[in-house]
Image (cartoon, rainbow, N blue to C red; front, side, top):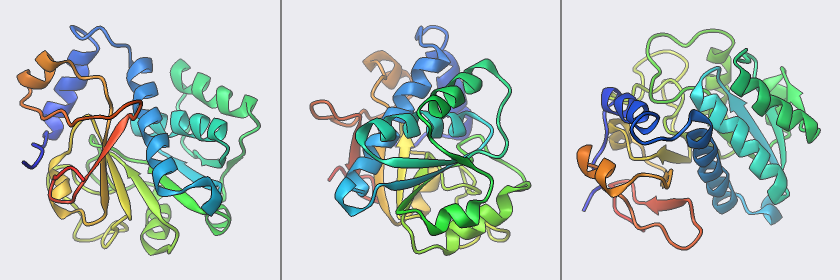
Length: 236
């Protein structure tokens, strides 16, 4: 059975409900999302195959997931480097950033140089709420992600993709097809255009919430915060 997808409008409504009647804080949801992203990196990029992880973060919640993932990756034994050019001034993001700086995790504004030294990349720039044009300084970054031979893990959506319509027909994201994608909570409609390894992460939905939104909760195993599924939605 293929897992059902969730539209951008429904995904936003679900997040809002999780933080109201679901009694989750945004900190909790971001922590769980970032933890699942870090576990995906651990599966895709074993430590003995390269520890240098470049984490590209945007200014919103997707970027916050990347910040959390980087902290976990550091504690696993990786060497993350942060590209976070549009840092949010909100208290939550300031705290997440300080946590990384307290670990002496480097921040860079030179994406091209950092890319040359990376073994794996986390694309946490834009998530399911992205729409419109890609603004500076991200067009060249997304072009670099598209053209690099270094494996890329996209968080919830390959950056610049439309949540409903998939990859753009023009612009910096045209032709961008990362090697892996982790859909948070549930797949979004864009997965029908995705061709790489696909994970589901975010192990926090109650049965009642999943039923209300018509979602399939995959069978997570043991301590895992993610499940790998096939490109057609089949669990592997």
